[in-house]
Image 1 (cartoon, rainbow, N blue to C red):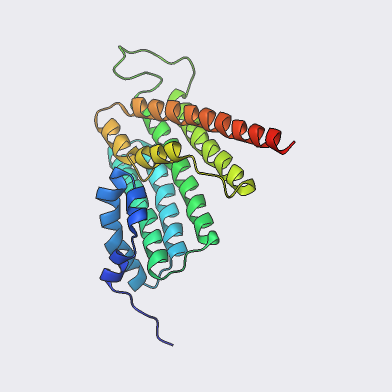
Image 2 (cartoon, rainbow, N blue to C red; image 1 turned 180 degrees about the horizontal axis):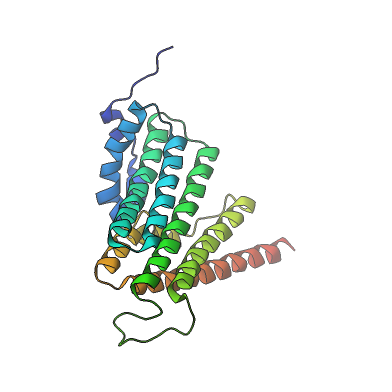
Length: 245
């Protein structure tokens, strides 16, 4: 039985207007255009959407590990692999839509690989920031932080805040699948996240010797976001519980 070969035009046509509008600016103008030929090439190589998701997760793990080494060559290679994850994260969806093979299991695989990428990127960035600015806040007159391994811990807080926020929302949607999504929070995540401005921000911070500031900013945003989302979802749960009495 012959395997159908999809054309590049079919891959491009698979992106719906709704999905295009949902993409953040970095995805829309950088990652998505690159993901179209990447998806076409992966399909030519016989790869399915889940296989591309797994490849992306491996890229992110390798990227985070290289970034954590801190040397210029390793750090830039790690950032390039994290960028490759973003392209592949778009490509797997392109493939699923082209072959019309979308499923809840494919969405689950994509989500888990995204969790892996966030953890790898932020932990790697925290370790790299500690090597670049050991215990010091850049551009703050040599202000020292009060605990050892400071920026590695801040990177861990950023990763934890992001993952907690996502898992809290996923758990809520599991019990209330018909609930409206957190539109503002999701839009912000798309804009600044792993397929948004996170990787270019890390690259800029590393180039300027101020990677620690980027890691700190993401820790504040993600830990604050985790608090806001949790309070918002708890409020919804309490309101629904009162209405059911």
